[in-house]
Each structure stands twice: as structure tokens, then as C-alpha cells.
Length: 57
Image 1 (cartoon, rainbow, N blue to C red):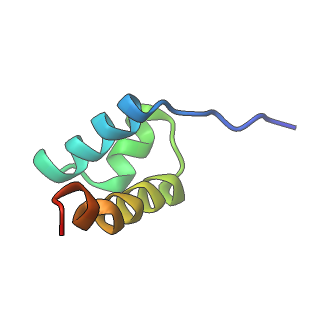
Image 2: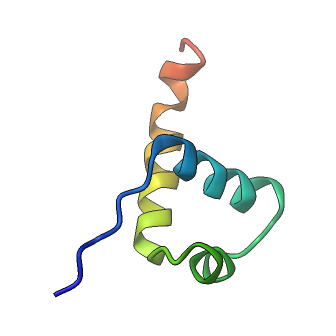
């Protein structure tokens, strides 16, 4: 059985920045960073859910 890789907050932020800033597709990022698509979607969801707190709303 394979162990799941754990990503640091910095790694997650870097991958999400590439998704949002560079218009790379999730599949491109999965291939580049050996990450699962669901991980990226979950990180993105968490980022947007926390946006009001980050911006003080």
C-alpha cells in the first residue's frame, strides 16, 4: 500500500498560485507535482472558504 504524500502549506499555496495565476489546468499541475486532482480541488475550496476571514469580512 502506498502512503499518501503530505504537502506543506507553502507547497499547496505554490500549486494554487500556479492554478490561478498561470491558468494551468488541474491535470497539468497533477502531472507536474504528482498530486491528486481531488487534493487540488479541496485546497482551492478551503482557500475560497477562508477568504472572508483573511480579508476581515
